[in-house]
Image (cartoon, rainbow, N blue to C red; front, side):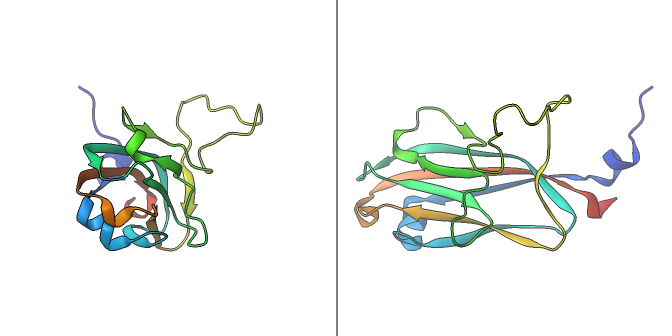
Length: 150
């Protein structure tokens, strides 16, 4: 019978989920940022997915970034045109984009943005018509491997 490894027993995989309603997005404002999650020290991001759960109404220019660098938080999701989405979108940020031919990932997963200290993950909202939005919900999910739990 299979048994859990030490890492599996410790629960090193964490899933973070943030649901942002249209009123949350309006409150963040055009060019504004909001802390979504805090990566624990000794952790790294495996994936980041954005889903437009309820269609954005009232604007056709909602763009978001998700990452950790306050000047331009785009490590996980970069310049995503949310209102144009037809399917969930994953891993479009700078940390996930591979330069041509310089890395091979044999196992299919390479944690990105490994952090030595606790680090905030933020969303940045860009939409000149943000106050015109009348409906919508965006879900952002992050899968994190946390080695501090080992």
